[in-house]
Length: 306
Image (cartoon, rainbow, N blue to C red; front, side, top):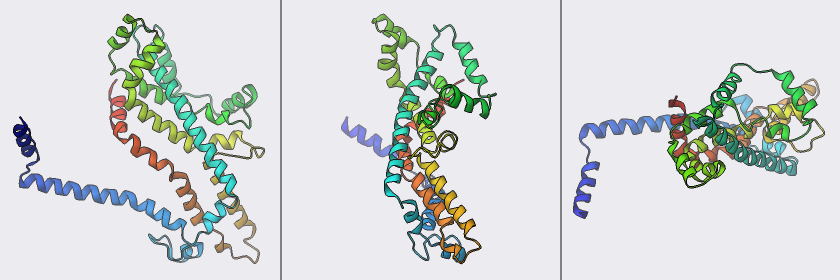
């Protein structure tokens, strides 16, 4: 048996000349494509470590002509503020992703159960909200006047917990799970919540990884709700909004000293933007490799099933 397995394995890896040529072209093409994708990120990192004067004189370079940490020094002028900002953003991302995943998974599972009589009506209602919305003013009044969430982090946490598109994606994924599994759980005497947590949820790993990545990116990149609902009274703000405020402050300073005897080009502008991009995308970029093996299958299954 061992010899047969070895022979089969050797037969599988044996390639003829045409296969080697095709595979070689594929490797070359993928390598070039990966390099093209990596080039902009390397350009951003190099620019963030360049002086503003060299950027104005030589343009963007893949390697800094004049090394400078001025942009990062400006951002981390108050280190504790940035540490608290990162802590707040990570906390909102982790808490929002866990809670949002659980809510979206339960909603998608409930809307796929044939014994749920209102599933079609609720599904239409969720889909209808993707076509029409109340607009910004009613939403702002709801959060501030009726929910009283002004200057509260719940104004950022709650709106991003779920979205109609994520619910539809999860619902389409759950369609691939046979309903007989739910019926077998009922025969064993388990209630609906026990069936969901013990039987259904472990089978939803690709869908959970895919939707979890979307939710996490939404929380990590959030700045719009922060600008609406967090005033100057709030000491700690999410990362993206804090970096946005720093860029605006530097731009305002440059405009205010433009007519004075101060060298405006010494103030970071392009390097500051690139430094904020590095600080904003650096930590979250390591999330994708951990869910990559589930992401492709999850998004494919959720998009294909009708």
